[in-house]
Length: 267
Image (cartoon, rainbow, N blue to C red; front, top):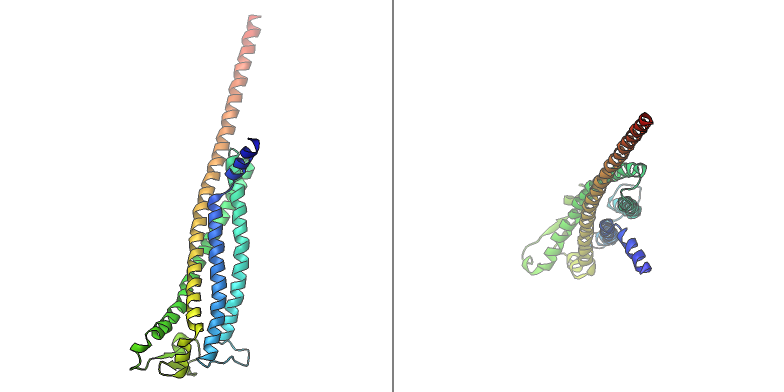
């Protein structure tokens, strides 16, 4: 019985809301970073193989350099949010423990209020950042969907010649013409290969991962706001208890003094 009570006590101290948000955050970040990294690698292969885009020999800011930068950003995002998820879980454990122990000591709850408020502000900023990432991730999904949809309906466009010009998407400079038409051999090879289908679906998964990260940030905001409200009430409760005990002690001292005075008067 003692072991089961100990287990129940340990389970009651787990911040399940923060745990669910952390799992969702890790799943979304892993999906975005993993699929996004592989999708960028597939984009390089498609550009070099079928659109005949070559890497600039000098240190110029071309599309391949931008892709390399995006990959390094993905590495940083994965590491940063792994640490941030751990910090939010630790904050959830401390706040839950303070609430369970009759709202804890006043100094601890005051510190908890400051930490919770700081995490709320930071999480709100990260939520806006992930909203921007989600919007940005939809751009390659839209571009690849147009190409993929054209490949799926090649029989309908055989009579007409449709061309995809990379200059329309800002991938190559205006003076450099990189066009791929439906009647060309490279377009047919690209549609028959696995790179296009795989890269398109990887970008879709990366977009889904970014959306999951946004949901996780919203979940964290709700959890942190609730924790902040609980800790704020704990401070007020502790102040009320201190004032009440002080007044009771003063009343007790007054009654004791009057009783002694009456006793001295009788004697």
